[in-house]
Image (cartoon, rainbow, N blue to C red; front, side, top):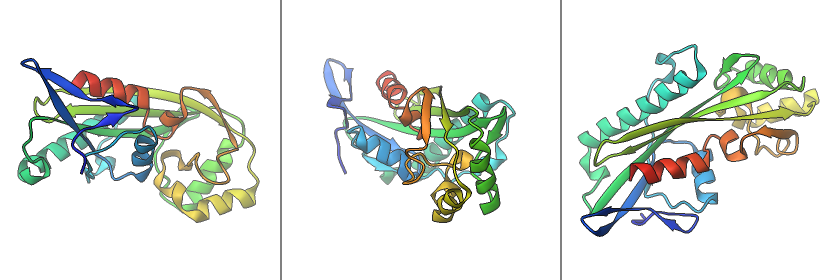
Length: 222
């Protein structure tokens, strides 16, 4: 476990009574994708924990509200668990910052989450071959566990896909990774990575972890 968090050579800290205080960052997600984005950016995480909430129990027709509510619910669930299991946050002379997030895909003004079946994943990928815009909506929540300060903001990005042959779509779905991705696509897939075009926003936002937004919220919450 790493005590001091670095993000692109920037040390997170807060000033308290004239002293520089270290910050430990917890990724509140079981997603290896978000973890890999953070690590590629040079972020050293103190730990990772899964919120284990029923996301389907939280519903809203507005995409921004939906991802915001789920990101906040994940934070609340983890804070409750941390209160019940204090060893997860051993005392130290600094602050813990908890990152939680949620993402959905908007396509033809309809919300898409993770595909529930193989057939639905195939249908999703086929629909993107029309060249229409595919939009990701990602909420990032950062909670200062010590002060209970909570900051939440939403980032959006848009992409277009090239036409995908049916045999390629079937291979992508058979590999299984898209079944755990909202909208049923993973732009790091060996066959998909060269078949999309970023129209608006950043690739890390498409991947579910907008780095500039996350870094700013970490600074503001510390």
